[in-house]
Amino acid sequence: MNGEWIRFGVTAALLLVAMLSFSAAVIGAYRFGFVLNRIHAAGIGDTAGIFFVILALFVSPGSGPDTWKLVLIVLFLWFTSPASSHFVSQVEYYTNPHLFRYVDRQMKGPED
Image (cartoon, rainbow, N blue to C red):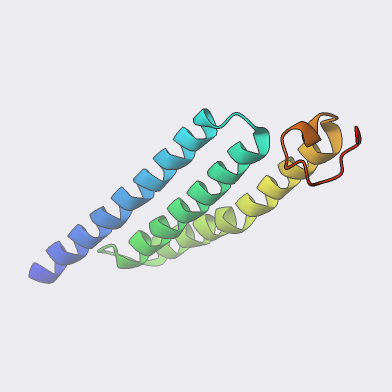
């Protein structure tokens, strides 16, 4: 009986950390002004949040075949999120003509 409560507490703590990570990603995506900074905040935050959700699923009481299905879904999200962030940043890089206004002046931009 005590072991179940300990697993419940650890699962709740991991899910709380995941929610904090997701919240930080949302706040970062809202607060940053430049698109690539927003993508970075969202990509790091959701990847860390998904990692803690996976840990919570492994620790959670009553893990069975349904838990493994959820883990596969979360792993799919964990692998596709960085790829989609990379794709969106490439679109920004190739379509924004004013991109070099936001980066360090040591880089040679089109207006130099």
